[in-house]
Every structure is written in C-alpha cells, then in structure tokens.
Length: 460
Figure 1 (cartoon, rainbow, N blue to C red):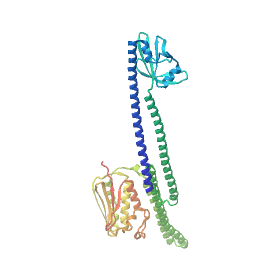
Figure 2 (figure 1 turned 180 degrees about the vertical axis):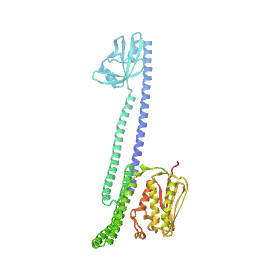
Figure 3 (figure 1 turned 45 degrees about the vertical axis):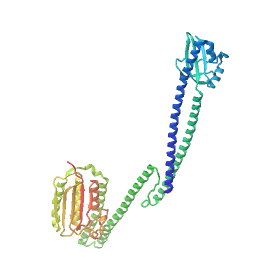
Figure 4 (figure 1 turned 60 degrees about the vertical axis):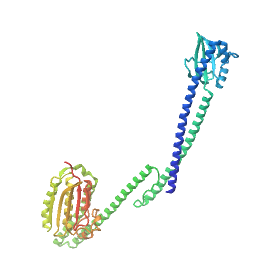
C-alpha cells in the first residue's frame, strides 16, 4: 500500500509538472506572438516614416539626392540575385519606375501597395521571401516601390519561437509518452493480478474474492461488480445445495415407506384389509412427495416474478375478513380460537391469489404448530409505510436459535420433524412478500410465533 501511495504521489507530481510546463509554454507563445505583432507594427510605421523622408529629399534636392539615400547611385540597376542578397541581409530593395519602365532599382517585380502590406516575392527557383511592400507616387507617373524583409529582431524572435516550440513539443511528447507507458504498465500489471486472482477464485468461488489496489475507477468498479456477481453465485450455489439436501431428505423418508408398504403388500397378499391399509398409507406418502414437488414448482414460479403480470388493485381488508371467516370453523374444530381485526378499505396493488396463499400458509402453520388451546389472530392496520398485516399466536413459539432460519427452504425445527410437512410453507410466504416488495419479519421475544408483514398500499 505504501508503494502504491508513493507511486500515486509521483504520478500526481508528474502531471502537475506537465500542467505547469504546458501553461508556461502557452504563456510564452502568447507573449512571443504579441511581441512579434508589435515588431511588425513598428516596422510598418518606420517604413512609412522613412519613405516620407525620402520623398522630402526628392522634393527638396531632387532625384540625385534620393538615389544617394537609397544606395542606387553607384548601382542603378539591381539584378534578381543582388536583390535576393540584400533581402537575405535584412536590407530593403527599391525600384523607381515611370509607367512600366524601370528607371533605377531592383529588377524584381515589387507589388504595388498603397499602404504597408505583408506579401511574398516569387523568384524563378520557386523561392519565396516575405516582405513588407509599400508604394509612393513621387510625381505624375514617377513611382517609388519598396520591399522590406523582416527586421533582424523579428527574424531572430521568429527563429527562437520556432526552436522553443519544437523543443517544448518534443519534451512534452517524451514526458507524455513516459506517463502513458507508466500508466499502461500499471494497468497491465493490475490486469495480470486480476487474472491470477480469477484462477484462485475458480478453485474456491465461495471463499475468494477480487482485491484490486488501483487508481483506475473503472478497474475498481469491475472488481466490485465481479465480487457482487460471485456473492450472488455463491448464494445461489448454497441455495441449490440446501435444496438438493432438502429434496433428498424429504423424498427419502416417504419413498422408503412406500417401498416398505409394497414389500408388506407382497407379504399380506391374501389379507384384503391389510392390503387396503398399505395402499392408503402408500398413497399418503406419495401425496406428500407430490406436494413437495408442487410447492417447489410454486416457489420457483413466484420467485421468477411472472405473477407481476397479474397484479391489480384489490381490497386487502375484504380478503382478510373473508379468509378469517372461512378458517374460523377449522380453528374452532381444532380447539383453537381465531380472531381478526381490520381497518376498512385497505387498497393494495398485487396478486390476490398469492396474498391469499400467504395468509393460508401462515394460518396452516398456526394450526399445525400452535398449542391446542392457542389464541390465533389476524390484524390489518395502518402503518407509516403502508399497511401492517400481522398473523400470530400465543404459544409455544419458535426457539430463538431457529428463528433466523425459518424462511429457508426445507428448514424444519427439531420440534416439527415429527409432524407432516416439507419446510417450504414459510419459504413461499417469504417469496410472495418479496414479489410484492413487502417486508416480512418474525418478531423476537414473543410468547408465540408472530409474523409482521409491511405491505405497500395504493393511494387509490
């Protein structure tokens, strides 16, 4: 972790350094461009002032004085090569024409510009030179044209700017390449580490998980999603193991009894009453097996969520009252008492058949496991998050050690193993609650088994 922290600090420092360097270079280029623009403006003003002085000489002292000032007295005509040499030495070239006839000056065709304008002079070898062109009419058809190259200061500043730009670009490229390589190397190393961990997880998927120490948020999210997927797979694997064990246990006993009954039938083949008894008992055991499979199919169908297609608005209060009235004689015959209290017009959005089965399972559970003279109740009342449905009895209840497992498939407490059942009733209740987004809880520290169900209700 310390090494990772040190590398993180180093990488952050490099990024800050690059940012500062890039900012400095940007400011340098802006300042340089501004400086070049000022030099160009100064050169234009200086050229205008110089030509004004030349015209004053011409007006005051004549053509000869102007030629002397323009360095045209000794060499009245400059060839193109001579003109190129002067321009290369940052000296201006001139031409004085009358009409289309060159009187003195450069043979180069200098463009006519009424005000100082930057343009390019083309030469026969394809060579171009950037110049500041300016023209001045001296008198009638006598025209003075000037082509001045970049000043020495401007050329020097341009060269420095180009060299600094190339050098800084090269340095930034090198540093960016190193950082990219460093980041790529770290990512590759992290991916190799993930690959090794995945091999370990493949051998022990229930106990091993990915651990990624990386600055990459994407890699961390990938590891978290993978771990969540592994947790779900492990939970599913555990459920499958539990279900397989439960099915094997619940089927072994009744099927063994059926096999014993068949063996007994062979022994009692001549005794009609004995044969009938064996058939009845074998039928009961086979019905228990069929019931287990039916409950498993029902549970899988509920958990798949396909029943949500049948959701509709219905009056939960009426359902509770009708079911309580239908079960009241059953409880009375068993020596127990069933009471109910409900608020009116609790409207829910759900599957009526599923919620009916939920209540039936809880009431059947109370019939099977409560004491003979127990008081059983159903209550439906308003709650902060919707409606609270409660089904409970006053004894003997569920042992505290068994309470965390009562909603697991095939779980049966020790005290209930002597009674018929397959341990799926409360699992179905839990699945129905989940598909309705209802919260199911077995209240602790109660005299009997008390189940609370918080059901969302419709505003309608």
